[in-house]
Image 1: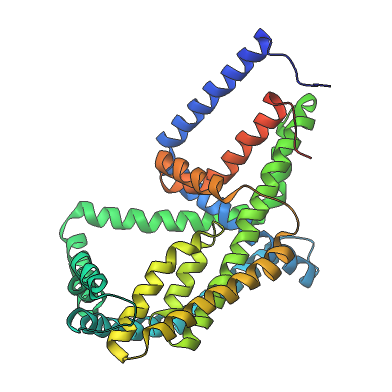
Image 2: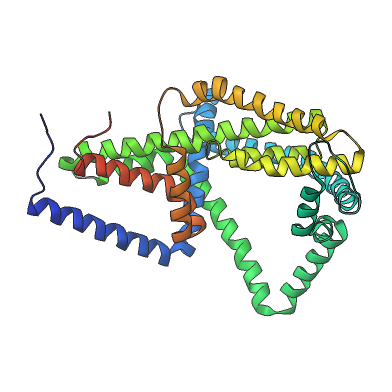
Length: 360
């Protein structure tokens, strides 16, 4: 028996009013995105760090959040500092080596079985390796920093822009601290703002958003970090140039499931560069790279995703990518932050009020 509600005049008016409200909200967000962006970034950071705060509260047996929040911030800063100390020297060394390899590939004629010379000519004609080498060189970095600083202090406006940029990041840090300290109180206040007669449906929609946030901000972020580390270790073992950087980049792409597949052309190009510079057999390092992809993908699908994400099904990867593209085009970086919550809100609203088939 069809339990859907009929499309009465009142119901159609409500749907049109909701659509107009959504358009007005999007317009308001676009107008105020300069002000809202630091706050939304801080909310996202606080949301991501909330499990660590809860763990610190349980570990310290503290009834207040102040000490656990400070401990969480110290742990995050310590981990970030250690990563910078380890990663920055490696990046400088790998960049110098990659600059030399690119120059070798641009000037060396190589013969690879089953790959015609026309492919190499196509790559060389469509990619300016000399420009890439200049961008990767330390002298270019120093010149860029020098020009930026001189330009910033030569004009008052640029100097003021630099100061405002620094202040905006300080505001983000303050937002993060305040939101983390009062996180539970803020969540409770949002729940109490909803009128009693609308709480049941509103909380069902909020539950959908919460589940999506848990899956695609906490769960998928954790999976992406682990996948990036695994790729970095695998590429470092086989000796692929810029392997750690490529591995971390693939991990970042993995925030949208299976988007890491677009890194395959980059990996293939790095294998070609490595062959021209070191003389290693192209097909050996290429299939070793493909083995890294296969092993990490198996670990992700068979171990990480079932244990971290569970059996809950989230948005389709195509919907996620479309959502990020649309909201990013409309609202810029702020749109990327709120894309998944807003998309989940719209889908949940459609299930609750239009199709009449709420999610379980």
